[in-house]
Length: 467
Image (cartoon, one colour):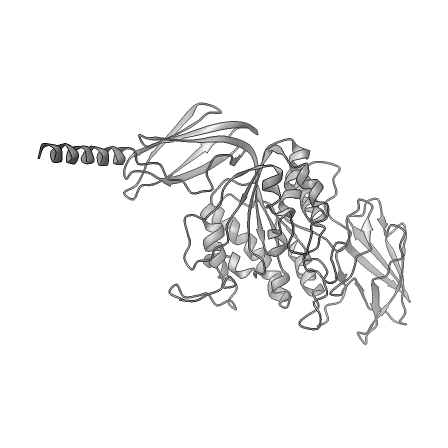
């Protein structure tokens, strides 16, 4: 009997001890090796024992912040971050301490979209990344941190997802988004600050699953799912936002990157509205103002006879790039592949996104961020003169004959036109007597041949609005 009492007392003490040692619980977005956005007030949140004081202490300044958890144990605090640096540690306590180690302060970017953002440095089967082995071999960098969000879909907004902050080394880079890595590598090298990259993407997905329920108020053609729907796919509106974006909403970021559009290519008119709609939705959810949002225009590819010419989707993306403030588009007209929808040259995509960030977000002078964009068209008889923005030092085709300009008369039939680079821009010699419209590279698959002297390609474009 005595032994039974001793055992019972021991179990009770262990139980009480276990309660007193209840650990702080954090979403996986907070962890060892993470990067926090510099020089701002960043939110940290989680769960603790109910109605307990929660204290956060940051090693960069020794400052402490306190709040109380609610009846469910939930709590949230904002802490001040200094200029870029580290590593630091963060201690969180509700009576029992949890320490986050090797925390850097720097620039944080969310990277999302479909397969061309998801495509890792090792590539897909029989689909390589150009220059990947060298990039992987030289990737060790203590100032870059990586997180890949595991794919999941849900009908309800979730508080957490699966993922882990990882250090930047060959093993981890080989399994990380190539586009995101090439972007991060360039801005880290240019700014000399730590960079955190969070990749949340899913191949083959449309744009609608990445928008929250609140983001569809203006898009009445989208049918939102019922919450008790038993079967649904990753294409169902809201389900990827719920599972793969919502858990990090509020995390301190500088901006977002996007590479998607192929799955929406047959609805360019709607995509032109949905693209800025997604940006406005994310900005509203984050509540930190009009943070920069940069995206990659889909690359040319031979989609065959099934569906609409993808140049219309590229046009929609080009128009969206000026629809709202603080967004921009990286063009990869010269990087597409006729028979592969996943271009090997992800370095072009990532670094052109970096040019946008460096020039527009970080305001570094001397960097061009866009290829030539049509400014004006002037028709004189059968001569058409085109001028361009983002061509301060002129245009080039790198010695090749420009071969993708077409001209049409009032009958709307397009014919190839002779194109000559001049000091003012492009002069076209029309093959029709009374030209009224010009198109450049307006085909499913084409290798763009018009650049500015900064080496950035022009998007496909047209001067007509014919159906």
